[in-house]
Image (cartoon, rainbow over the protein chains, first blue to last red):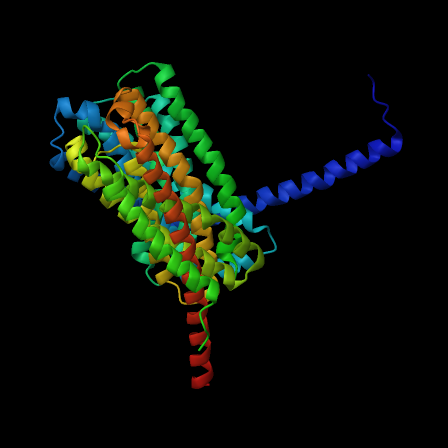
Length: 247
Length: 233
């Protein structure tokens, strides 16, 4: 079957796609602006990054003595130690990144900007993700050197990326709520940890599978779970973000 | 002072009667289980309390959605009522389950999908109330509460599923074998079934009764707040 395209139809289609395209690029530009602002502020102060990195190294240090990481134990607990480190260090980053917005009145400024609220959400997700990934990328080689294991495997990096996306997707939404409460310094982990347990479970199982050289069919369900979790919670947070910044 | 509605009073009385009958059915009427003995009797109440816990959790989703759409604080009171009942009944279910598990599984606790999910759900509820406590503005409190209720409602099934997957990959036979209460590991006789379903039914009525009372309490609290404001102004 062939479809006849009349001149009028064609013009309309072109115009529609132009309008759609402009909105889309506006949205992306707004997201980019939020990310750029965060990265630039961080690049100047380096508060958040330093705190997260030092905290991560301290957690590994504590695990080293708490679990007595000899060669035998290490094989089974590496994935667990890594993900505990990322989970704990992540809350510091999320809390701080949102608290800065709130304290200096930046959040109100952002809300006044004539952009979609979800652009702010996705911008914050991307910049939080960037901080987390930078810390992870530095922690992995350090851990590899300290414990003489090679953690820089493409599969593991993929799992870490997926897990971090899920963690940050929920974390950004919940930290936006927690900084607006009286008990904000202690509230975020309490709100966040019970919700991200599936991420921790799936990421630890998948990382463990990759580190012990399990078969792909054993690892794939966990990767699928991570992807599903990310899609579901990005969508949920996208729909709910408006309500947590509303004044 | 506003009078309690007659229907609610009747429901209160009915709940007490039903609870009495349930206790009788569970402790006296139902036959003693052959293998586990008398401790199995806790099963009737245990399942019923877990059922109410889940009922409240699911019931909270609707007012949360409606609140976000309408911004009417009435729905926030409904949501809090459902979750408050749930948090108490889930706690009871966990404690009763542990009492049963000690002789049946020879341990108070096991990191099994149902138990772990129940514990995580309980922690989510506690987080929910901590979140609400930290906010003074009633509108914001209601909005954040509704958002957190929905996030929790989405995450609990995923958590349950993922914990189940670990167990399946590690020890596939154990779930059915060591979980007689939840998986139907013992065959129920007709009398047991009567006690079981009656317990479910009466606890559902008790849930409705508590739910109604709690919503009414919330409304009265609101009224008191407004009267206080009027007096001070």
